[in-house]
Amino acid sequence: MKAFTLIEMVIVVVIIALLASIATPLYFRHVASSKAATAKAQIQMFEQAIADYRLDVGKLPTQAQGLKALIEKPGDIKEWKGPYIKGVPFDPWNNPYVYRNPGLKGEFDILSYGADGRAGGSDNDADIGNWIDTPQQ
Image 1: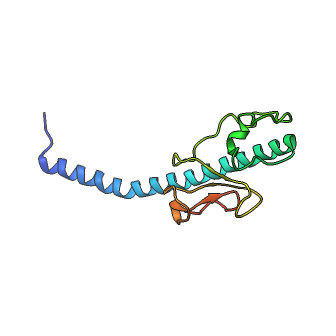
Image 2 (image 1 turned 30 degrees about the horizontal axis):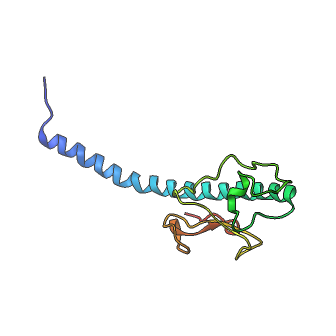
Image 3 (image 1 turned 45 degrees about the horizontal axis):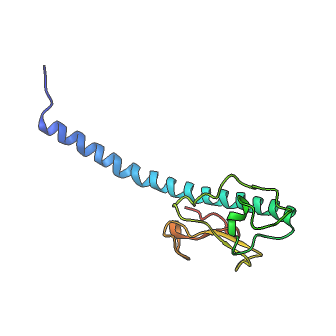
């Protein structure tokens, strides 16, 4: 029975480490861009649910009601025919989406603050909203 020498084992470990150092950044770049795409898709889902809400109720959810008005009847609004979505998910970075009415960029704003959870930023930290295209990675 022939065993591996220590040198052979070290060479194999070095080769694996080199391959991992090449593949890991590619993997994380792909994960970051998929999170941004997921946030944009969820924001579009919110926009459609808000449009349905508006058709039934005749107005947008107020700032105080927020996105929760899409899943729970707010107050005594008789025209409400929801729920308009199954639930209000967190963004891909596990932060709540922000709803503004009136919006700063449009009639209403829905946005994720990105990976850092704060306004502004670039790359993975860039804000993603219903007025902004998905950042390119």
